[in-house]
Length: 560
Image (cartoon, rainbow, N blue to C red; front, side, top):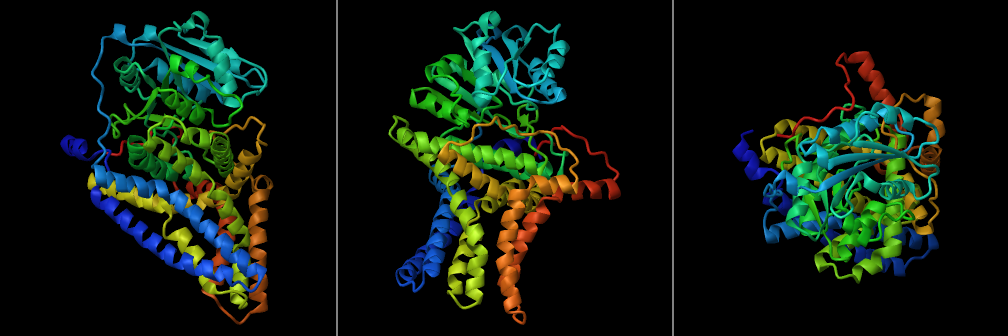
């Protein structure tokens, strides 16, 4: 693809794509309004408590699905009304002497030393004045593995390794210890703090323009850089996520940050130390300390910015490592659900009443409200077999179940976002990536099935404040035996079996009746259990039939 074409099209979804999304949204909303009205009348006339519960939960789940899809629909409409979102232009360069000093903090616990070095080395090799760039590795492992990193960088004056005992304050506890121990390591009057999770990297050329943004805007509190998945060849999970997730961040996150509110993701980001201190620092009592800090900064008058200077240039796009196993994904999504729910519970009303512009307050509401849709969806997953069994046995109208299925499938925001991304890659004539995005989506949809129940647990933890343990997201994949997989997935297997048993009973009661709805319902929990073994099965197939070396921790090819 030529440079001129890339500059014209990169970063901005096309209008026709948004028109299609909005037409689908309009059909969905009109259909829901009509069927929802009918269901409400059915609820008032319900002749049995079971039917009343069936209808009520269906309506709640449908409303939750609307919340999930709302950000995509809202910002599609805004983009059509206000015009295409341009990619962020590079700031005007400044002399090296005017660039601020940067301390990049890398918090870790029980991390592999090669992942730590990967993050630190990405900073040391960055295009930035060496005398103005430092790295802090703050570790709270229970063993002495941190000393391996300390010995490796003992002759590098730009790297300092800190250690603390205990897990109080989660990740924020490590970051606050790092701030307390800055000392002469940095000039507190003029310094930026960078953040990287272990294994993540700053792109070689992105730190300089990100830091330059602060020189031009004295009220800029943080700059969140664009990032992609850095281990796409680790497992089939990271492979599919490298296409679906990267596309979503490039095409969806970009215009949500542009027209709504930029989110501080907690890695691949630079923050002004003065803004962080003004907002109270890192809150160790919050699971999502990064979201909380970023929004608090903006409520205090500091600005936030999301940048995608050259979205197809690997030298300008940072990377993150994602869990390559189901268990790691479950831990990560559970923590995200806990953190988002906790923030909504404690701060949503406060942020809605803050001096933030209305569009940013609305964006915060959409982000946090969508989080709650998981819980009614989990309840529906448990009751789903009972609904089908009742419908087949004549205890309730099948239209109620059909409404729930339409609500879940037709508006699926992930499917819409993925389709939008694939079409935009096609607009750039990047056909290979467009096809890969389409192929990767069903793979991702499969391995996401076992995440649903853990996300629901996260919602409950966020509402009750019961998450007290330091949760680590594993970045390395490992070969799990069938027994270990089964033992680690008791929750998913239990929920799946509880869902499938009523359906099997129904099938036994009516052995001569073949019903596609019943067969489809039975397949869902079976697919969920099968997804638990997706990674080991794909690894076995790869070892058995493929000869290509599966290189790990590699940067995905540029989407250009």
